[in-house]
Image (cartoon, rainbow, N blue to C red; front, side, top):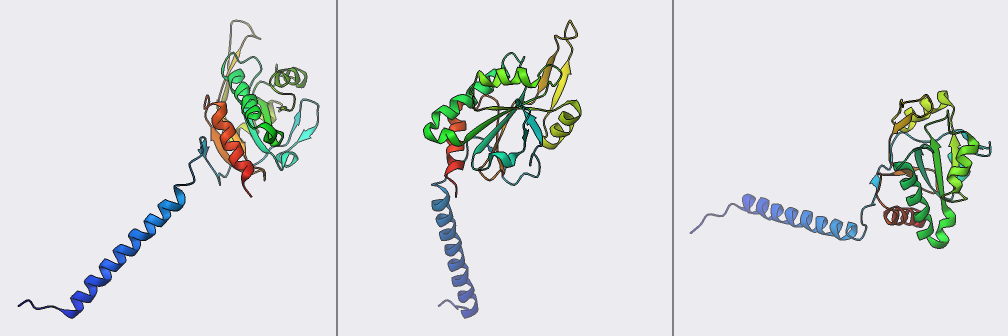
Length: 208
């Protein structure tokens, strides 16, 4: 006959029940989260940077994030003479707004220039108007731009060309996405695609 230790048996039963409870909890958690797909962009909810700006738009009007409450805001840093990355990103932004249909009215595209020497408000007004008439261009003078770039963790650097005015600008190529409360939520890498941006914005617009 086997000798059964009552204390050991009780411990064994408690262990089995505990393992079963943990397993059931994990299954429940998986079932709850399986219905919530990840964002297409990088989720940076809670990030302690890029919280706001205080700049003028192409009309000379002072702008902060508070002006766009109730809308999803997408900010892209670039410059008007950029040959490829900037027009591609701005086109995707405009296409994403179009894909949203009626919800596009709650989509605000912003273009912030890293080339204040050449990108005057007048130049930027014509530039963003080529993509969507509701998009805003934000101007920062060289001193402001340095601070904004630090606040938003944006890289930019002037690369000299053959003439004083033919320089180019190296710069970060992604976009920041804010929810309707003005909270930073996503970082969209360059060339993510209009459909992905539209899907993420639609999801943010649907949040309570």
